[in-house]
Amino acid sequence: MAWTILRNGRNREGDPIDVEITEGRIVALRSASTAPMADGEVDLDGRLVLPLLVNGHAHLDKTFLGTEWQPHVPGSSVIERIKIEKRLRADLVESAGDRERLLAERMIEFGTGALRTHVDVDAALGLSGLERMLKLREDLRGLLDIQLVAFPQSGIVRDPGSYELLEEAIRLGAEVIGGIDPIGIDGDVDGHLDAVFGLADRRGAMIDIHLHAVGDDAVREYRGIITRTRALGMEGRVVLSHAFGLGALGAREQEEIFNALAELRIAIMSNGPAGLMPPVKQLAEQGVIVFAGSDNVRDAWWPFGSGDVLDVARNIACRSGFLRDEDLGLALDLATSNGACALGLPTCGPKVGEPADLLVVDAGSAAEAVANPPVGRDVMRSGEWVSRRRLHTVSGPTNRRESPAQFTSALS
Image (cartoon, rainbow, N blue to C red; front, side):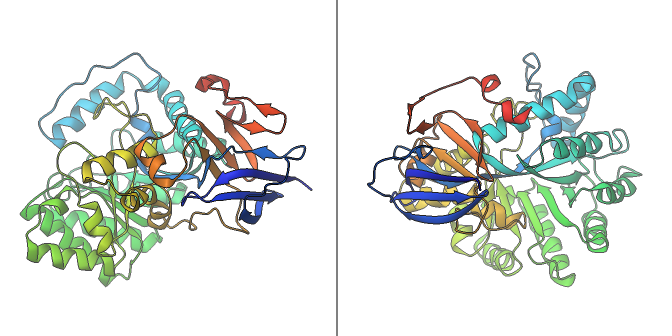
């Protein structure tokens, strides 16, 4: 029987704990023992024990990671940016699979256990990106749980054939129907939303819609989504990504829309972008599920990013003015339990009886982990270490700081 005890860790409140693991599951969580270390026990040296991170919104298929630096090409609108991206990605088709895998592996090393990634599906690309992502998901099974969104970035109404491709994507294994700016991209709020909700309802899929609009267009889109969610009984199955317009609503519209989001369990994703963003704390206080994702990582849209959703949580906290420990704790929830809830996944641990899927970081509390995301991280899946940057055992400290290439043996 495989058996491990992690000694001298800390829970998110900072209390000293020991974690006992048998056959890949947590069988005990208790106050830290003062007994001498025994052979084979792991000394966490006062480090924080967290559940694995949930990256609720990424675009693996877009990253330039692993290629030479690509200078950013500016665009003045979402449609213009889409055209620029298509042109830049066309020159990098052959390396797409390698780049996607590199970013996914780095996410694992940061401590990500679950990922929702959007994959472009349109008449020009067909299902090529989805087919690569299905293979990557299988290759990384047991290391990273990947949820796939069939994403019609070029629109649905204005891109003939995309609806049929979305349906085929769900048949092949995508779990989520994507959408984007029903007014700004398709110019048809009802046509776009009827297609997304109708297909999701018929195929039992979830929904995740990119929304960048503000003002009256944003309100029309929110109301259209709320109406369809309620009519089809899709509570808890809809996500609004970005939803910039939530940060610019009038008082009456805010009360109406926030209450409906909470009632229907429509979740809101933010990556803490430059410019306007949803009012995270206010939404959370209203009972709305808010969570985090890395979004674009070094691609045609955004030259920044690493894929570390804990750093995204720090950015959201900073932009939201979170200074108190309880607010920084909320920021951690955005990258753990809230993300799991929004994606329809089991609630994050660590809990007795659950798989030993753990992230151990160089921090003494949840607040510290968010305010200064640690470099030192050890990642465990089902009781097995899959990435070790700093691990203490009874035989003495290793204090290693390897490069990514040196601690991916479990990923190859």
